[in-house]
Length: 217
Image (cartoon, rainbow, N blue to C red; front, side, top):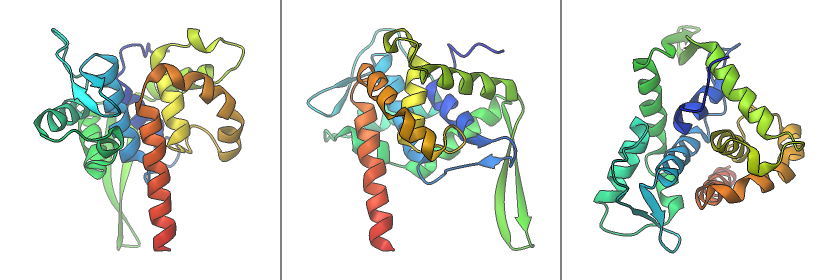
């Protein structure tokens, strides 16, 4: 099975969103938020962002560079914005573009194949096929292992813990069903504190988006 230690979190979350059987992305309603949060988490973990009273602040980690294209874009936006803004602002910012940024990066790395198709000659949808399905299987296996209560939360690899927490908050159906998410809540509560401020920002943003959809209905 491929090693996943060096796989950026943004890439992990996109791969987890891929439904291998249907060859498309599932749960897209929150995917952009999840990917932006993953980019923020990468920057926070690498010392390129610090928490300043509930707001991300760019930090001068010597020799460090963003690990992914989306993390680089998010870091640039924060650095160029003269106004300090809360973490959840950056989780929501350009969420639709975030999906395309990560998709294009994986296309360039030849990890996925994308095709555009039409249903009944009218509806157009994007087919996403995995070129290296074993990598997604390995990432999913890390999430499954992280959710097992037999392993102390402190010993779960950081990337696996983050992927599990973000998949849970983002309600990623290819990763866990509604019943599995409900059962995993105590374990997520154990894994989340080590990740810093980003998971709470993602949770708040997902909740706000649900409220907006409910209000519109």
